[in-house]
Amino acid sequence: MKGILFDLDGTLTDPFLGITRSVAYSLKSFGIEVDDLETLKPFIGPPLDVSFREYYHMDEAQSWKAVEKYREYFSKKGLFENKVYEGMEGFLQSLLNMDMKLYVCTSKPEVFAKEILDHFSLTPYFTGIYGATLDGSLKHKGDVIAHCIKQEQLNIQDCMMVGDRQHDIVGAHQNQIPCIGVLYGYGSLEEFQEYHCDYIAKDLIELKKIIEEWKDVK
Image (cartoon, rainbow, N blue to C red; front, side, top):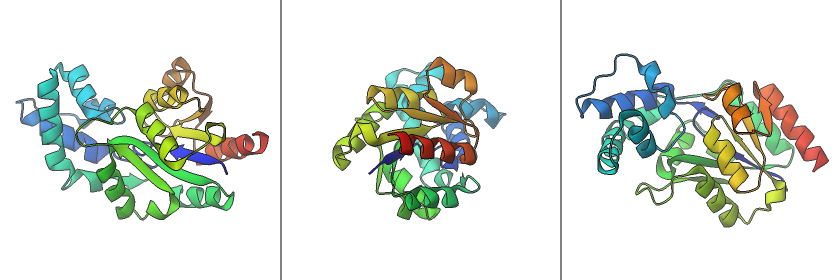
């Protein structure tokens, strides 16, 4: 049976408000005021501690303190300041109707991912939900994908990743599986091309067509 591994943020749901407000809340504790939440879009997708170090030049200890502050807001408000992309439920059901098994592989802590999917009634579509650990021992997309493949005893020849950022492409290729990049999320055509994304879909219609064709030729 074919398996499709989905990223969460920017692929299944649009988490813009929740993530950027949580980052702004965290940065404020460091005396950094953010006037435009749009500037925090790069935080959507990658592990948070990595982004705090990259964009605000924090050391490792500071970055984890920033993650702790982020979670103060996110765990209470931010995770629900989110919305499911239009047509997603019907799309996921159509894949189940094609006898596919669906999984979530996200760099977001697994406990938050499960809360979000439960809140938006998406959990029943997925056989397994995999994410990062709160202590950071499991956080990179490639490691989360590998964990999912091992736990579910999946055959990599029958798997495909769907995501919206370079980390999804890199993580998929580290596990020898192809990746579809979705342009309705937070990545770009240039990003997908630079990281040699196997397929690119502008919307759910194209995404479904690519998956159907992949299923038929494999």
